[in-house]
Length: 541
Image (cartoon, rainbow, N blue to C red; front, side):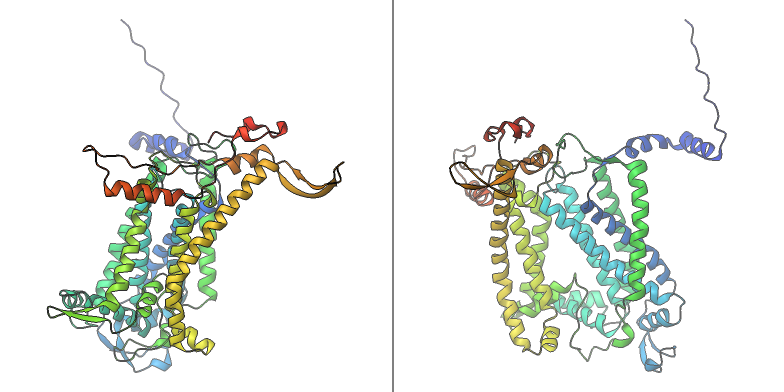
């Protein structure tokens, strides 16, 4: 038996070739490049929202690294003798003094502060819009339920990072925000006071809260965000990327472009666009001018103090609940005016996190979905989203109730009462209006598929009747309009192993009927009677 050896491959001669060969022999990186470099991604503008959030986080890390070189996370009292004359000689914390030093004396410091703040707002906004896109298109369905939870965790971590960073300068505005957190903690029965003492290191405001927030802001929360981003992107790679309905797009393929070199080039250019926009905003638009607020003093509470927009609903909910709703049970005071909105907000967050699992249970839909829903084709889900967004907007507006009263010269109590009514009426109205709009759009799509598009051309028939000529749509547009599945509700309940119909089974059937009521089925090929409309080109539903 003889063996033969293949001739060794020719050694690379260029520097790039030698470097690539060096890495390949020691890491086998070509396998990863071959696997992920040819990963296909669909092309749609809404997919860029996640990229905006990712690039904003990169800008946050870069600008935050610069700021850590000069910031002093200490509440030790110092006397200010910096270049900002109006505060000269005033006693303040070292944290506030160092923030003034960054703003007025460090070259490029104010720009970095403002870029950092705007990037934080952009990160949370892009992540929120990205989640809304996923929600309204049903991209959270199997097999992406866990990725929805990861994305939701990222959104919450983004809010936590924003709040901790917002509180670090120790100015009057951020101090009032910490005072609200102290009040919420102390409203917790039995353990509230101890939790407040634990967080602030004693009676509010204590002397350690800034250093603790600083540690969470630059170490703990960023580490968790990076871990969640890595897990989120890993799941995106493992699962096929979702795509919008269209000709040739099914659950078994992805129509788009490969990661390398197309999307890598696009991503690099888009990063610099996001970076440039954030720097331009930070250069031209002032945000958080702490020198105008002064150092934090627990004694005064200024009107017109609002947190950043993503924390605003929490503040607004506290303002909308009538005050002095308290009760004493077994000697413990329960401040319901603080506990109720805090509990409701927490329940809403948990509901959002588990929504994919709830919808799957209600609908009984356990199939994999890689083609997205048009929001109009899921009217109940779209209406639920509109209702939640309305409630969020009302609470957000309530956080600025005092500003609305002063700017429009109306009674602040009138503003509060109107918003209290809207908080209950607004989501209900938004739900029904949104659902009827979705059903109306579905009917319009059905008419377009069956009868074509109105051309505006009026003709007279031999009988004397005037009719409008309809122009048939092409097969690609028809595919987009009918490429969705009509689900039937669970009509009957099924007995369990003991032959009994449980309450949960009845509730599931009722919720399924509610979720799919007034549904409109897509046009079937058999419904098209005109030969030129090519019914065979319709996808099966």
